[in-house]
Image (cartoon, rainbow, N blue to C red; front, side):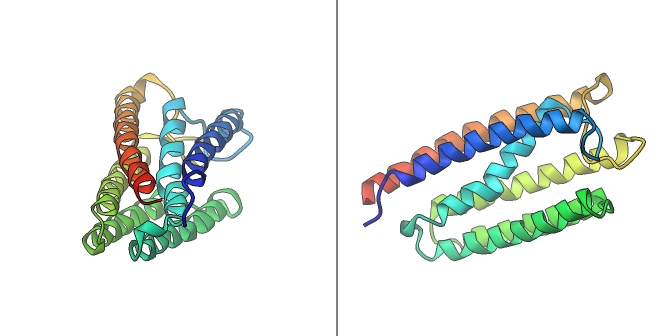
Length: 199
């Protein structure tokens, strides 16, 4: 029988680890200890949010046996994202040959993958997860396109920095982050209620 406690605990642990690593990354990036230029604080919130949605959350969902065959869909999605992480981090911080078009291409591919996984899902809960993730990849495509065309630096640029010239996109980022966390709160409550009913 599946125990109730590990999943909420793991979700909280993921949020805590992302908060700590987000502060450390923000200080390192803006202290010019890492390549890629400065990063606005709201962009750190966006980065932490999508890391949680695209890596930690599906990893925790794989532990829920009640999701049945949809766990294979989650494993496919997570494998796709782990491959991106390995390749992209190497290109950004080891080989220094990453370009926003690589990210945009993968964003569009994964948005299509998410729509396909949503149509293949047997569970409304997982179907909604993939539908929202597909939309977030399209949003990320827009953010990357903005960075490509509106942010310049002396070296490689990986992020949108703070500044008046980027105020509109940073405000939009904040609104997206707030909206997605409101959705996640409702979605996780529904998921946990199902776990407690069946545990």
